[in-house]
Image (cartoon, rainbow, N blue to C red; front, side, top):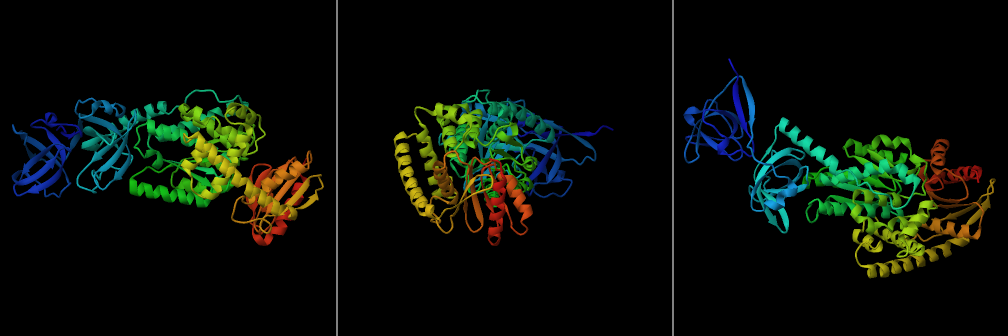
Length: 608
């Protein structure tokens, strides 16, 4: 005996696809005294007379029915059947699927779209579904009643077929949903394969030369292209991006360059008018690594956005941090929640972090060093993401190099590229203005303020006035701080001939104001280097439980020294890191003398 064939109508099927005598799979929509109403799909409904009901049902129960008659007015008479063995076959309407990128040509017409649900946002009125196909991103509005979730069976990540009329609301294209159904496994796999193949091709970065010639950059090109591709893919699939960066001029330049590229790409890809704000979030990190405080904030916001606004969980991009063992506790958190993480950094890397990352750009991996700064790397990656922003951001690497005191050959090339609009002094001033303003911004990104400082806001006159003001205030604060602390500096000559200078930034510097301890130590170090030309100079700025290191001419390896101190000083709680000759170390207050004594001994043994 042959199995009964039970047909399942696709979401876009009309009455024309229903045939008398055939058996269909549906669900119970409601009841009346004379029988049960059955939906064959969201658009087609029939009636099973009470005499033809075989089993007691509840609303939404699946039911198998045979079509007895299709009346001239479109009403369908059904009878319930209960086959013990049957095969299911899908019925699809032979309708041309419209790509999302083409719906602008279909305003006022009904279209069929297939794609992945990237966001489900419940408003006080309709439910807004963000759908992604191989061509772009679009919004579809479904309404049952005000504030009530439409199509609750549709989840984030489902592959659906939806039909509806294309409308224009507030200058934004939107599909008014008539029907929407999650595709079965076979059809979903077909659509997903089509989308993935197209997205992989669309996400491929542009093949363009770097702004400057650099062997290190060329060696890093494959990793940089990988990061750019993942960023582009996140934008094209409406996955939020959280960009964490060190809160200094170099980190800000790196992040601002990517911000310009990504937000422009979001607008080009058909996102909402405010999509660039909820799909891209830039946040500064006080430390040059991804702290537990940082990941906790990021995770808290991501989970709330997922629950409240139906957003995907984000991709994390770490810039000017993320390469060291200190990042691992936070990276372990991202692994638990399945957040993909990428790093673009120039701190000395630890191999242990790579198992937590999907991509890692670091000049040390190809024989370079910290002189190729995060701002330089970030700007070149931003151009790979979106070449259209190249002219806007071409001066950022020069500012980053000035802010991070880079001595790499690339710095001179980027300065030449920025001239004559930005002289070396201009770049130095802008970097100082960034550091000063970020100090007062604390944990805020200051997106629009930073644009003005970097001359990305479209008002050059305001940029110049604002930078001049910030530099004047910053220099005044620095001079006052340095003047106060210089008489209290203690010095000695170490066994290797290095001049060691020590300053207690807790007792002899203004606290809780600009410049902070790290900046204060750096400014004092620069002055001491000028006072001792040609001599090896190390400056230690210390407080109750920390020390900031700056070195010129002494071949230290601060990350290695931190590991050694941690192992050698039991109960010291030593941690920290940074670049090889610039960094910071933390410890417990009661062990300060032991840590400083051991640290000074190691510096005195370092080669000149």
